[in-house]
Length: 399
Image (cartoon, rainbow, N blue to C red; front, side, top):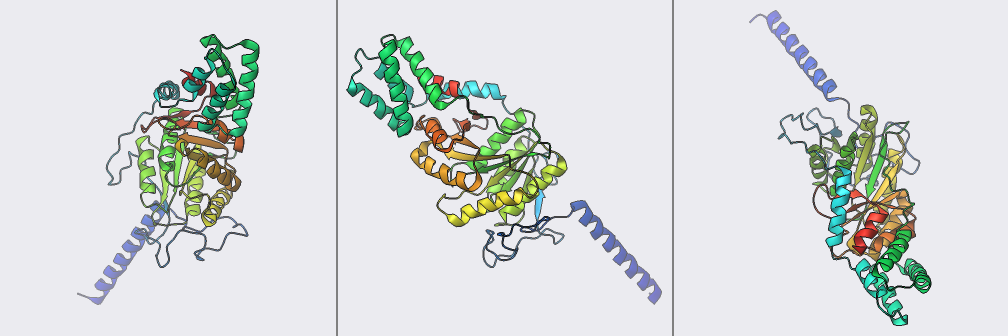
């Protein structure tokens, strides 16, 4: 074969390869490597590559995409399968229907707070021994010492003035005082409307094992039921299955998930890219999952603060929701206090409020933090999460 012909063939092959690779690059879009930000870093944020501010394990190289670019990607919506198994999109239950169902479950639960108080206050004679029993019932329900004393004093005064023989009157009296204690005036709404500067940013935090990722999936269902456009950010990069779990929850309701391809990637980088995607796609809400961490682990709590700072380079964080397991009782108060100091918690999501949970924890948490319980979960189902309502909660305790 003549030399000129071989040269022409070689040139054609090179041109085809260059065009193919260039097209693939631009179709995939530019990705930002974990730990790299497009805006100025905080003075106390270590430079990338130091290994002090990420969960990348020593000696572990970051994963690479097929085009050699490390980074964060958005999970395709269910209809964009790209070789994945197609996921049927659910229609979440309406919020109002959830409230009625959750109240019915709380009524049937093993919560003896309201029943015990009604029984004690309905006795023919209420002496000091009965008042001691009432106080003990409230303390055992995790109400806390200060709210307990406040409620006992209020009940003593009303019993003295109004009497206590009529069960209906006793119930009305107790209902009024409990609602005051739960505080119906607190703003329990989730900031889920698009802000003037971009999407509402919601961070979800908590200790290990409270079900943050599952809770985020359930919150996404609540928001989709309210016709909100949502993006999820899988910044729990420490637990290998967390990103896949979150993506599955999102796919069920047609919500995309921004996630990293590398195990142990910088969680702040994933959070940054999630917010960036939310701004570019003009969504209503970006919800960011974070790794579970014990409140006494200083390094991990510092990392949580860093995630919030990095996110705020692009947009203000409008909500920080702390997920608490209601069955942990007073231990939950210690967790809540430390998390609130680090990331300024704006609302509580209380899970597992049925079963062995003590209803008084709602009051205790709100009193200690000055932060409202905004959402409650009473079951394992995908729609077993609903906005908290003080009157409905008290009525369920007393029914």
